[in-house]
Image 1 (cartoon, rainbow, N blue to C red):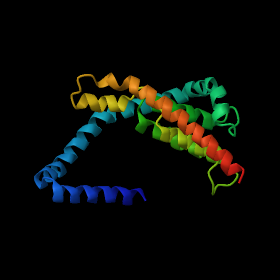
Image 2: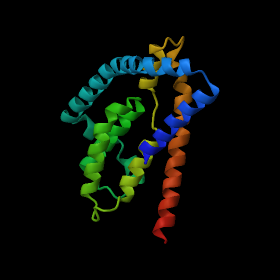
Image 3: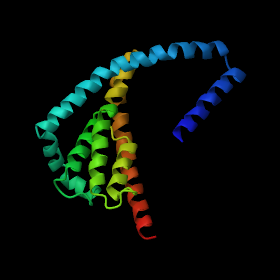
Image 4: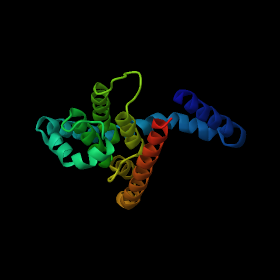
Length: 194
C-alpha cells in the first residue's frame, strides 16, 4: 500500500513540474538526488554503527536490564500484559532509549526484537496483542528528546544553529506521545467492549 502511495506522490510531483514548473529543475534534481542521498548516508552511517555497537555492549553488560527495571513502574502502566522481568521489557527500553536520543534507524533492531519477544507472549499469533499495538503506537508517535539524526542533517547542510530544534522536539514528543497513548487506551477500551 505504501509503495502505491509513494508512487502516486512521485507521479503527481513529476506531472505538476511538467505542467506548472521547470523541467530543467526536475532533471537537475533527478541527477543530483543520488549524490545528496549518498552524502546523507555517509554522514549518518558512522553514528548508527556507534550507537548500535554501544547498545549491544550495554545489553551484554546487563545495563539494558537495569534500565528496564528502573522503568518497570512506567512499563507496568503502559504494558500491563508483559510480566515483570520479561526480555521484551529490556528490548522495549533499548528501543525507546535510542529513539529518545534521536537515532531512529539504530533502534530498529531492538524494536524488531521487542516485537518478536512480545509475540512469544501472544496466545493467538494471527492477531497483535494489546502490548504489541501499544509498542507500535509509541514508536509511531516519535519518542525523541535529542533529535541526533536531524541535528546531523542540519549540520551537514550548514545550519547556523543545528541544535536550535531541541526545545521544539521535546515539546512535540511530549504532546504526540501523551496523545498517542490516550488514543491507544480509548480505542482499546472501545474494542474490548464490542
